[in-house]
Length: 368
Image (cartoon, rainbow, N blue to C red; front, side):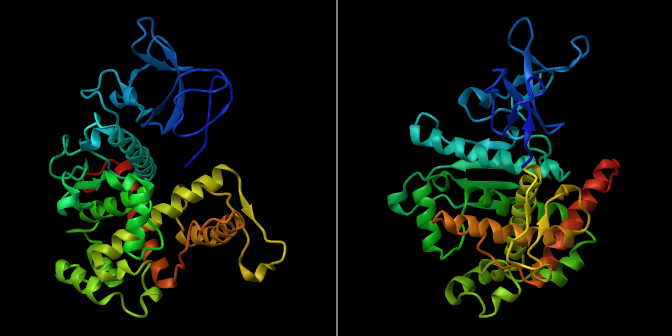
């Protein structure tokens, strides 16, 4: 995630801010420009223009409808056909907000989803609601278990552009219990979003495209029975050598899950490196010589870097530093994974595909 700056007073701003703490201007995120702006209220008070824009011909905005719920700080042009922003228009279903615990969980879901959508937009990928494109669009259902005591639980997953998230995942205790039950190293709300949207983008970017052959070379044949593959994984576990070829044991269950897991980690890497770049971080251990490849200056915006190896050259030293800092605080490693060469090759493929789609859309080509 990038850092932002108040163009009125110069104060540093963060992605979720809706008011500048220094000059008190209201703030709104403009998704076309991917920038957080101070806002100037129009005379009637219901609409805004961006601070510094010429009053005569400036676009006017309202806050997204979900701003009233404390769940969104994004802007909607006043001539929009929907009261929802580019992120919230992706929602098909939200939980019943009359239940207080639902409201708190939904806000956490929205915070994670907005960060996801920011990344997708920054990558230049197509982000469109099923309301606008029923065949190729994306929707989210945020659902609560109706009768957990009877074993009827909402399953988090993806199905033809519809991503369902059980809102219990927004509860830290519930999520940690699930992590232990599944023997996972890592389980975060944002990670869920990144994984599930990976399935969606497999459908959009890989299936029935020229990329499918290379996908099968790297990830395997997705035509193998998915249900049987998952059953075998849960019954027998991962292969003994899974860590040589996969980012997680679950990734070894089926090529679709390998793609989704690898995609999620690719997004982890890109967003974290962007944050490191925004803070001007560099890593230079005083006890390590240059031959150990533990040095890195995060001097490049990862979303603009075509060479994925350059991204990995910066990522690995950064993870060593992040993990060491957390251990000094008595906290678990924020990135407890080893990325083997086979996984790097898969991530490089994802990076190449995303770069091609970005350039295709920038050129307004019909085959994107």
